[in-house]
Amino acid sequence: MNIKKLKRILLVAITVSASSLVSFNIVTTGFIVSLSVLVMGIFIYCYRDMRGHHIAWLVAVCSPFFRWIVLVGENGFSLDTIAMIVPDSFFFLAYGAVYAIIHKYIVKGECRLNNFFFVAFFCDWTGNICELMVRSVIYREMIMSSEYFLLFGLIALCRTGLVQFISASIEYYTSFLLSQERDEMFKKLLNQASVFESEVRVMEKNIGEIEVVMRKAYDLHNAPENSGISRETRGKLLEIAKSAHEIKGDYMAVLSTLKDVYINELKGEKMLISEVISLEKQNVISLGRSRGCTVSVNVKIKADFDLDSPFKLMSVIRNIFTNSLEAVKNNSVTIGVTVELDKENPDVCKMTFTDNGCGIEEENLEFIRMEGYSTKFSQETGNIQRGLGLPVVWDIIENEYKGKIDVQSTVNRGTTVTIRIPTESIGERAL
View 1 (cartoon, rainbow, N blue to C red):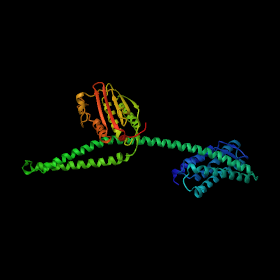
View 2: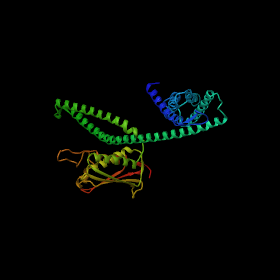
View 3: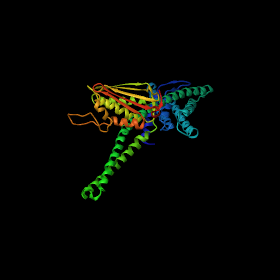
View 4: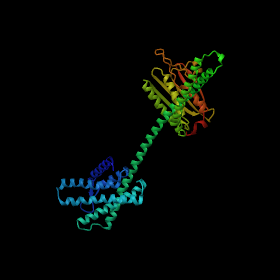
């Protein structure tokens, strides 16, 4: 047994021993029913990585010692105080021995709720019988009777029932906390996957463009001798083609890792649209706060769906929310979200996103699908914000969900983005 585990067992034994001071006498002088057995049973169940009989045997030393100190303080030192506390040790020794035997020859496995009641009941019952028999020897008087035998069974039944109830409550609460923790971790993972989903699409597009550069450079390198391209230029063109090929290989390696670790790993995981929107609502509010902006998001869910690929829609909603945040006026923006069935076609899920931002000028609306296009230009710094934005939204909605997007915007009044997706592409109806 390692030192760390020994320290834990010793701490448990001391705690159990201290609880033995809460007790009352029954049957005969010195024989007590204490809280320690209840506390010990809970510890044995909760600390299943430690041997239950080791705990009981260590308590067999510590508990009588605690009780002896109290008795000496009350009545002074005498042989009677020793005679009163020695049988306590036999209770815990018997408890540990019965626990070890049952687990070795009957249970033969880990202690669980469905078998722990049986184990703890017999350990408690036989421990009390053993203690009373030792007291009978010490006081040279036969105290045991059939009534006491049944009484000990009833005491063991009550104490074990309490242990079972408390242990079950602890296990349920622990499972609840773990479930919440797993849920939070899953949402964070989905969050990351949705970000990578957008980045992956841009990287895949870039790979296509790299291939075009590589092909053109290689074609120029192989151009006819009469094309006027010098040998030195041909060499540089070949180097460009090779470099482009290496860059493409690096891109593909990164893409493969992202897809395997994040995106493909989450395929098949489901989440409600309402949960996705709630998560992204928290994200955009937090992002706005970090930028010194006040963001309000009003959500109306009239139809909910269990999404087959939640992180894809996460990417869509995040980009729309981010666009609304970047269109903020006076450091404040209100975003409205409505999810419902399309009135004209009930087989279509309609999502409407509105904001009261600065809007988009009419002549710029036709360019918003273009990669790299942005109206967010800073005259002070010369920087231009080229977020993934609406081009990625269009790509996912049209190519992944087979849906359609409509954008309406008025300068200084705001923007409305309407998305329509066939219900068969989005998932099962939940509301």
